[in-house]
Amino acid sequence: MSKSITRRGFVGATAAAVAGIAALSGCSNSSSSSSNTPANNTNTNANTAAPTIELNDEVESLVVVVNPKDTKTSSISLANAKGYYTEEKLTVTQEPFGGGFPEIMPGLSKGSIDVVPYGSIPTCTYVAQGDDLVIFGGTVMDGSEAVVRAEDKDRFKKADDFKGAKIACFRMETGHMATKSWLRKQGLKIGALAEGNDVEFILLEGSAAEVEAVKKGECDIAFVNSGYGFVAIQDPSVVIGFRPNELMGHEFPCCRQSTNRAAFEEKKSALVKFEIANLRALCDINTDKAGTIQAISGTSGQSAEYVEATMYSTATYTAAMKFEMDPMTDDVKAFYEDMVDNGDLADNDKSVILDHMDSTIYKAALDELIKRGENKSFYEGLLEEYTAHNTLGL
Image 1: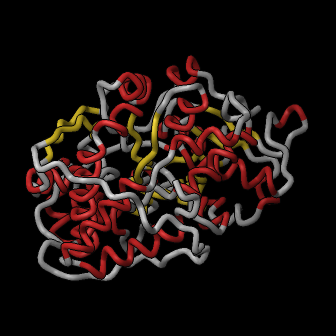
Image 2 (image 1 turned 45 degrees about the horizontal axis):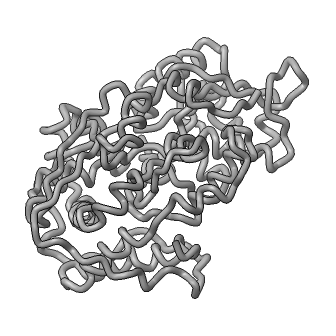
């Protein structure tokens, strides 16, 4: 049965570990076009003329949560490793992911942490419960994959295929909530099968437990993220059955960059510098695959095979994560509304999220990089995507 998340329930939930990398070479001296295709829902009311944010010429500082063992927060660790923060006159203190969301989200709300670049769900949950947080950028979109038994590889292709399915998930995994909403909109009843519902979502403590439940036949599907699908399918008894974005026919915002209201108001210049440095790193990720793989393998302790698979895909594995930094305010609003309709939030007011999103920080960073002229076509490509995904004027 779908239940709203209370702060007590949120703090008690176990979140998947998420991550950062460091790399050494890339986009700093070459021009590139964005490899992503801009969305088609362009709107002339898009926030293409963001207010000017003056960059402070003094060195500023931010405290940012980073887990160096995974590949999710690539742009942050890469920007740090290549000295981009220093070049932009910014000091970034990396706070370890440590105890996960139950530990870092209170720190973000209280101001001891300035930026958390993980999870749509944690920020949406805290906003719904009254915390004054602001989503101002992105980390990755999509990122979720569904692990199934090998014999079920082609079982789940349309909504009716899910009837009678037991789905393992953990609370902070975005893809399962997006899929739950999609199934609900297709007319399926979500809840305990024993009570006559069509699809049952079963909360477990994390990815390993979910996959084990599938192997034992206790569940039919396990939703995982952060590249755990690559780890899981090393056992040939399970495979990737589908990815939610492919199943639903649209992408969804996974990890976002969130700050607190005080930092948003008082550290705008530092936040723009942060985005500038990260965008420079994102350009490198898009243009120097070999250098990135080599650097990340060396700094994260992960194998080159793992890094390539989770960041770029291989012949036998398709990466679920798509690196991007766009705040995607339109998409976050839609996801928040889906969480409300799913019963995953305690507050039913869908408009609350509108006061907790911002696209001006990211836009200011893009404008600055385009003005500088280096790798201009890459950033202009991102600007097209920004225009398509941020039509709310926030």
